[in-house]
Image (tube, rainbow, N blue to C red; front, side, top):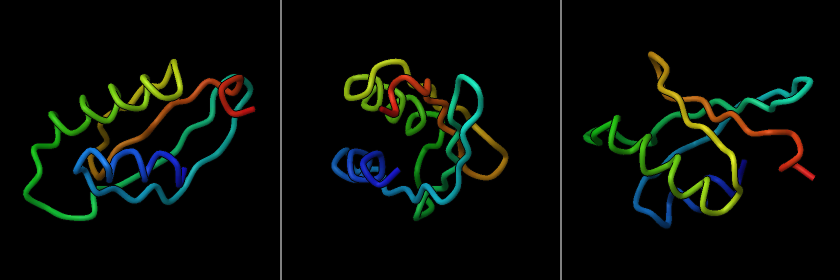
Amino acid sequence: MRGMEKLADEAGIPVYINDGHGGRDLSVFYGKFERGGLKKKECLEKLQEIFQEKYGTVYVQDKDVGFRVLVANELMD
């Protein structure tokens, strides 16, 4: 989670990933943007792009408040 926060910060998107849980095949992390004034859709697309470059198959999805990150458990090793 902290590695994802660091990548996002380096891309100019300040986030806080504050919760998560592992399932059978996927781990899910929940995050929020640390400041307002960001274009949420563009930021989510950028986050998915940089996370996929670094970790592989990672998906970032919009939530009413914040976002969630889906990560295949095989990438967590």
